[in-house]
Length: 468
Image (cartoon, rainbow, N blue to C red):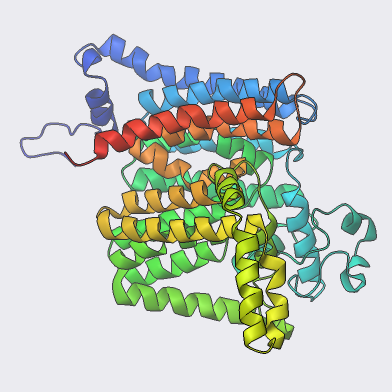
């Protein structure tokens, strides 16, 4: 289409690139050279990912793995700055290429993929994965050797119903690991497209090249990209005033992984009653469908909430505070006094396992998180900012923060150009050095490298945004 007067319309992407690079506007040769750097960046990133794909077991070569990831991270930052005006097709091509490069690499730093395939195998046999732990003879007979190699084989699955559906369909009943990884990698590429649609050019370019999703989704095979893509789709539908579909997408995100439940207040506030009804009905229907045989889809969620801890920001401090105040012992003494006065009710026997430092620390952090989430929902008007802040708070208050957990905030950090969480997204793979120690590197050094710069950058951000 030509504008009035017959002049040829400017390509909107080229126009955006000219706005991004005003110093080369009016200089066609220099402008063309600047645009050609996209291919240089793509080649540099692909070289790093090819080297990572060829790297033997990362557990024994962790320094090389981290160094190559850091190099790819630098390229991703350059890509965010230089390619923010690029055509979506190029960014999607780059994202797909990098992820395809890592698909053939077997997961070595995480064994979650193995559990996904086991759950799919159990479902394919017509058995609920929530009904039995893998070491239960009722299901262990399906594949005894595989059952013996599973993580946390004494516990039923923790993964929600939508995740279970993805495991079953994507892996062909637990038989095709690469196919399941490809499904999650495709969802990861969809995140790039969704960021473009949401107007986050910098974020889309950075995310397309960023090593964390490429290594954790296509490489290690984690499912988080599916939940994140559904959450972003919910926000996009909400912006388009399609509240019912937004509520459905949000319910699917929550039932892929419960992390997105942390964003329910700001999204629900924007979505209104129709959104809430659609989300609630969809979640209830899916939950009921997976409750066959009386097995609750909650699975081992309670065990995870009360037992897991790793690489946390606030949890160690909360434990130290609870221990210094001797809260469990004091609470137990008060409870025994109450119990003696009320005739020793039978239900009280189930309370005693919770009088320990870790549970009280979790309860303390839970109360703090609830207050923070309520404050964010009340005070932060922009929905995307409120979702970002809510998910960030959830991660910081959680007792466990694996590297792939940061994938839930990375698209928002890239979208909003938030330096503290961009730092964390690049530094969090250092946590693997806690699981697989590197000679001469103490865990405290790794934690400091992750969180000291992060805390400083976050403090600067909060100071700048504080009301005058």
